[in-house]
Length: 299
Ligand SMILES: Nc1ncnc2c1ncn2[C@@H]1O[C@H](COP(=O)(O)OP(=O)(O)OP(=O)(O)O)[C@@H](O)[C@H]1O
Ligand SMILES: [Mg+2]
Image 1 (cartoon, rainbow, N blue to C red):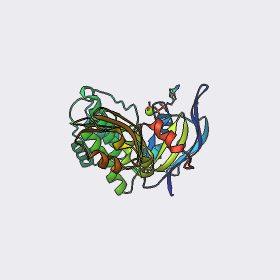
Image 2 (image 1 turned 60 degrees about the vertical axis):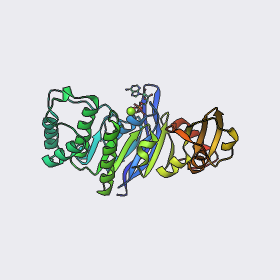
Image 3 (image 1 turned 180 degrees about the vertical axis):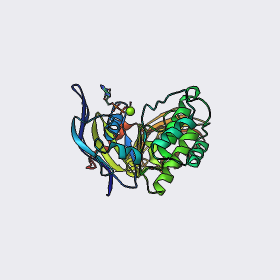
Image 4 (image 1 turned 90 degrees about the horizontal axis):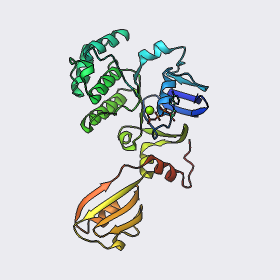
């Protein structure tokens, strides 16, 4: 089996509304695959179809070579699934809940749970109901990772996590890949998957619009940059730098758009005293448009 996930024209309608439109996607065994798209793009719908939480209106999917519907029990054992809306009975402690789930999955080493909880700074003995949103999300992450599944399917895994915990989560993903596990994770932020994912797909309005190596996507992403200097700067100091467009200089502040490598811009800026340098998260919408300018990387 070379592919952990294969979908063939996978589609889902809610009434007349087509939320997922003929998705053809392949996730290779052992890769970390980012599934990117803005709100409402169809990420959660896709993931629910893969886990048989929803049934397709058309097309089909194979997960670990199996059928999500007929082989659901086996798949749930072999997959670690974090739903986008992870909820559990709040009266239990994480330890009680995770032990119960571990038993359902044929037994999970208590040490694995302890180690994960420790790394994510999750207290296993408080009532789940009393936990903050981020701490509940950690319970969801521990249950997804604890049985060392062949495939992790994670819907917005960093939702609610603070930056330090988000980083720890990314380290867990990296280690999972090193252990040969496959990771499929959704996000609406490119930078979140950029450091861990091998490839990423971008989905928009239920359609797959691009699949590529993450490095390639990142290199093509356009971001807005704002540089503030300690005094007014001449606009022409920033004309014709590689990858820089839409330059506007207002007194001591430069606004521009940057594609790819920041080196030319940084070097031009360094001729003055830089007080602040802000590079915004690339907007996925802008990324799509840019991605299409005269190329053929369409999936
Ligand atoms: N049960 C439902 N009934 C009707 N429409 C739905 C239902 N679930 C989802 N949709 C619609 O399908 C589309 C895709 O939703 P989905 O939840 O898959 O998006 P998403 O990419 O996960 O978005 P987000 O980033 O906000 O989580 C949206 O337009 C949503 O409103
Ligand atoms: Mg979602």
